[in-house]
Image 1 (cartoon, rainbow, N blue to C red):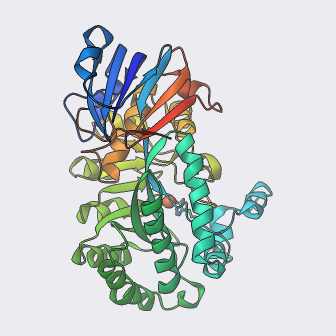
Image 2: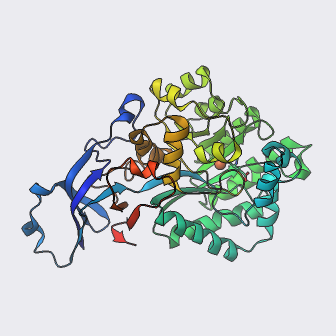
Image 3: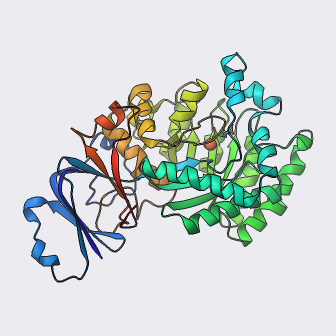
Length: 415
Ligand code: NIG
Ligand code: FE
């Protein structure tokens, strides 16, 4: 099967160099081809270029050819959303109302709300119901342009419920056209372990992680290393256990305080360090000297009114930056990566070009898939979207509540 996109007004995020991430000043430049064609064979990008170099006759011998006229429309690689918690049992709008009335996110968490509230509900819900709900969220983000997504556990808190979440994610991998990576997340201490924290960490290390690894239920292990959650020492032990079982680390770091999470993440060569609101020169220097992708979650800062990660300083220092949605019921109830681009521009002073790299190739790196996803290059998986007729790529972050996506193509198939 050959699918030919013709007369594309602008083909965006073309990368003949096939870079695995884009850092510093280079983030300001996005390569595009105006008046372009793109050819998909089976699930891969076979060729692309200027319309004037497109020769239909070369493809006429093939049996099935489909063509799409993209006049006035633009084509982008699908977003890669490298940080979500989109398997959850229920929304938490009561906490949203409580925050409006003056409680803080940390106060709500300390009183058994927050993650513990989600865990209580998730423990009671059946695997089938969780799966059905999570598939609906996946469908929603697919139509908003996301073609690859990382999904975390962390609302189970008991081994049984963590495994339930990870099995739901495995089933999603088998049933969805999106590329999915799954992560075991050490998210919070259950109430009964608050005064015996070491016992809980031992339990995760000796029971939970070995089962997850032996059943191949996760691609990564993540720890919420922050004030009121896991300490640096506890995070160190969990990341070490993950490494021993072949699970590379990720960290939730420096969201609520300068937690030391970045340093411990980098020590274990975590693939990404996420949140980063409380980042100083020392953390920037540590990240510069690493293979860890700094990942900013604008939805959480926006929704919780948090301090903003110093993105301009990070890019200025030469770092790459990825943006992800953090889709979850407590701190970021949205998986809309178009809006994440808007927040990147409006709140963090990123240019539209920088947000394109941050939501495609850099976020692909942060979930370990940038060799095959995140840019338009020959041989990469054909995960793309075609926009409605638009004037230029900056209208995507500019029209901050519109969905400008008309057609979604995943694995070379029109959805
Ligand atoms: O990434 N920061 C930690 N965990 C999630 C939020 C969890 C929740 O409130 O349910 C986050 O923001
Ligand atoms: Fe998160």
